[in-house]
Every structure is written in structure tokens, then in C-alpha cells.
Length: 397
Image (cartoon, rainbow, N blue to C red; front, side, top):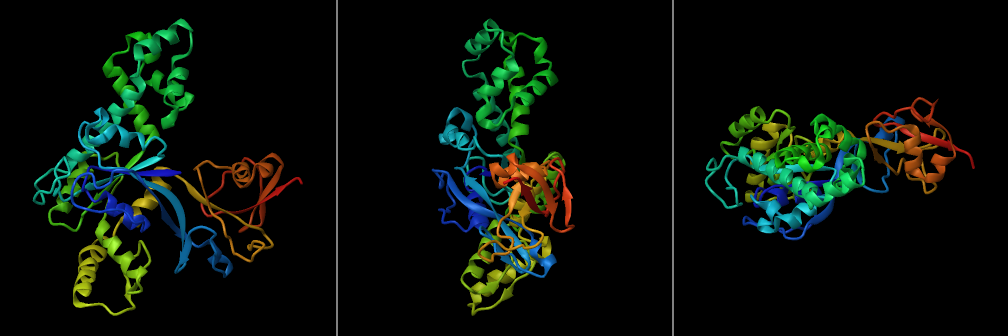
């Protein structure tokens, strides 16, 4: 799973990325600070499954903190996109191509309206952040259209001459962005394009098809950043009304980054996604004032900084993945004594057999049954697993 962090320059995208991952990325208030895409690991937050057994997990990857397990997910931060990106403006075509493999997108916008369309600072409220949503939709739609219509006349003529199914040919051409044959067929039929020779498809019809592909292969939520800036909340309400189909989560990336950095340096105890922190070290007056601002203007107001909520929502609501753990009914530890060391994020409809194959091809091929460790009951290969299940796989040797 790969989640892309996108947005225009200077909207707080790289700050969000660093707050989510604590990776070392350059942050500055001018366009194109990020040139090459940054890859790093973020974490989704789930209850530690070992608690039910009176134990604490020892993750092979990720970590456990105060009863919460943080499971790694792969994030990519691409350079800021500007209007005309699909035409190459601001090196946009390169950065759009960096998103090819992304399963979902987090669109970070400056909800305070203090950054104009080209990523240049302006007074808070001096720019309408709703334009950022419209702009990104347009850029992504035209990017998909460009991928689809590349040599379209030659492509469609060849399909017609060889009497191939157009939806199969389109799926092959767009396989790099996750378009399947079934999806292609369904959308061609939905738009009535199956009744029209491909050579006769208009630009508007190609754009409509491209938009449908984009919506399905790059689901997106909006991280309304800088929510603690005056005027941001009013913009947030307008945004939700204007774009009801999007999940919109208010956040303050700077606050999350400050809390994590302070915790990293032993100044406080902080669990990402929580609404409080506990000071554990000596702070100067400036640091105390900054943390008090975060507490009163962000945590007390929103309940969290929003960054952890964005990651969890992207994985568990937008993509509908679920955490599944391998374990044994008789023993939760591995050979080295680690309790429930592994966690796999599985698709919504993943079955016991899917999980067996995820663990090892031989487990899938030689599957006998699965056992739900919590209930100690066997389940069949077609049983759809639930979030948080701990599963033991029995296979022929």
C-alpha cells in the first residue's frame, strides 16, 4: 500500500509528511522546496491486540505505546503541484508520474487561505482554499486523459482493425495507474461509450472517462491544514458544503510536528492522536508558551492535531483496509518470544485463504483451515476476516 501526499507548494504538505513520519525533509515557505519525491514510513494507530490476553505486543515493524499499536504504512510526498501541472508546468508531469503507484491520495490544503495558487504567501483569507480542490481535480483528470488519449487515433484505429474489445485495450494502457479490465468495461458501459466507435469518441467523452478512472483508482481525502489560523474554521465549513463527497479532516501539522519532536527529545510524553500530553523535562518559557498554544488552540478545540486521524481515515475508511494478525491458539509468541510480532493490513473483503497466501504461498496452496485465536473456532477458506482478528493457519505439510 502506498499513500501519496499531494498539494500545491507551501501549503504545509512537507510539514504534514514530516509530522506523520519524522523523516528529515526540507521545509520552507517558498515554492518547490520538494523537488524529488520523499519516501518514508508513517503509522496507523490501532488497539494493541495482545491486551485481551494480558500481554503487550512486540512488533517486528512499528511500535506499541500506551496500549496502542502503530502499524507502518508507506507514504510518498511529491513536489507541490501548480496549475498546468499536467502540461509540465512547475515540472508537474514528472511529479504526477511519481503518483502512478499510489493507492490513495491525501490532499493537504492551507485552509486558512494564506497561500495563493502558486504557493506564494498572502494574508490569511487572501485566497480561497476551495480553489485548491477544484484545481487538483482538474490537473488529475487531465493527467489521466493525457495517459488515455496518448496516440488515441492510432490506438483506436488499431483496436478497430484487430477487432479487440476497447475496454481491454484501455485497461492495458492504464494498468500503471491501477485500472483493471472489469473497471474499464463497467465505466465504458456506464458512459455509453460501448455504443460508439472508439474513433468517434470526443475530447469531452475521453475527459469524462478519465475522471471516472481517477475517482476509482486514486481515492482522495482532504487534510484541511493550518486549522488554528484565524478564518480557517469558516473556510472549513464552506469546504464541507461545497464538496460533500470528500472526507475532510481539519489538522495542524505544525502542532503535531512540535509535539512529536518534543516527545522525541524527552521533553514530554505524547501518544499520537491523543488530546493531551504530559511534560517530563525542563522547558524554557518560549517552549512552554508554544505548547500551551497547541493545547488551548488545537488539542482542546479539535481533540487531536488531526494528523493521526488523517492517516487512519485514509487507510481504514478510504481504502477500507483492516489489521489482521498471525498467531497461534496455544501460543501467541514466535520462536524468539515476541508476542504477536506481525500485523498485515488486508483489503476489506480479504478471506482466510487470502490471509494464508499473504503469509506464504505454500500456506495458501496447502490450506486446510484457519482458526480464530480469540474464539478458538475454526473458519473456512472463504470466511471474510474482521478487523483485529488473530488467525492461525493450518496447512498440509
